[in-house]
Image (cartoon, rainbow, N blue to C red):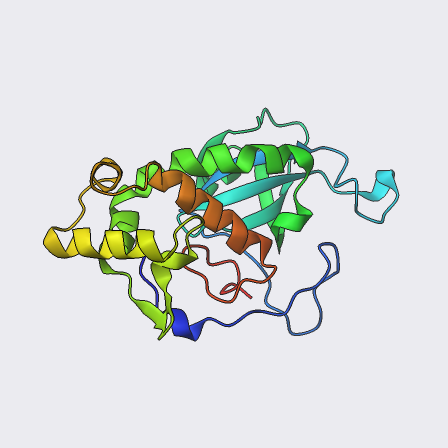
Length: 216
């Protein structure tokens, strides 16, 4: 999960429903990638500037462990449910999902997707605990005045030094270990909040966990 953070710069942005320009990368999801359905829009996205009859049925999905948002075509007759989780290849085999339409940012999510994304992330972060523990154990300074730990919501100078001193004594082994030895009571929640901030993109210069800007 550790990145060379200095390689990441703030990406350019475009409105959520602007079409891809010439030469822009076509988006796809690797077939073995896990994803979860955030919302199902049988009549297309309500903010899309098209007549309802011409809109494509879509699902908004979140992939793991790269934490990227996509809109994907769906088979409108398929038995597909919000919060259904599987690998992309299996969704294709079952004829529930089709090809990717585009990658989206948080601003392109429906209200349903926005309501679900944090609790889903907090739960899914637990499935990648070892990778996130590695971040707490090995993260370094990004600049002389900014440590990667301080990019987590609620982590200030005091919390940062507390984590650094504790990991120097002994490496963390679980989220509970972090909670027991520091004043960080809910590490998965902080990680989920950071991922959401990275998906929002606004004002984000460094990306710790989401590959949303890398896939452009």
